[in-house]
Length: 259
Image 1 (cartoon, rainbow, N blue to C red):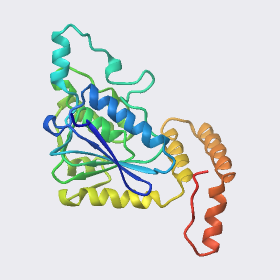
Image 2: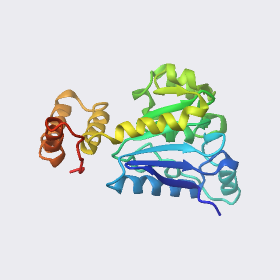
Image 3: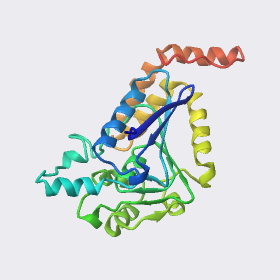
């Protein structure tokens, strides 16, 4: 049986994670959920990997929850719970890595597929992609969408959830959910090019700024200021903070150690 998630180190510092249930439009069943969680944990704990790209096999990025599995569970008397779709202290289904994640959205990204795209830091979509939050069409809730108004206008978030209607990649770009829309044939090369640019930078700088940026969505300015100062002082104690200026003065590429 083929794995539901493929994990590939494509080049130094760059990982490609592929959702691999193409016949089911990469729908999230128990197997895919577990394997994707393991892939994200593996990526975050690997000191040699700096950035990961997530994409889907076939014509979909991810069509959301495997509703056939859910229907079978219901028939068997297995009661679903919110914890099937979210963590105890987070509206997301997966622990979010400290390192940068890029979504390369190659087709349908619906419900849980939108979730996987949303948990990525940067999002590039094919011009053929369709994205939507469709849970209301099947009597469910999208826990992850509770945080969506931090990323896009409230009115856009409400329209997506209330109507359940998928939108084009161009519309998703217009509301600020996507960074870029590119032709289908250029999707992976564009995502890998962005990943390559990210991987060339100091790993600690990226990791610390990701923490700062997301904290900035919630913390008042005084608390954010203290966090930023503490993180910056911590960064300035690292070997990489010395290596960068030294490499610049010696006119060579820096050799990052991630410490």
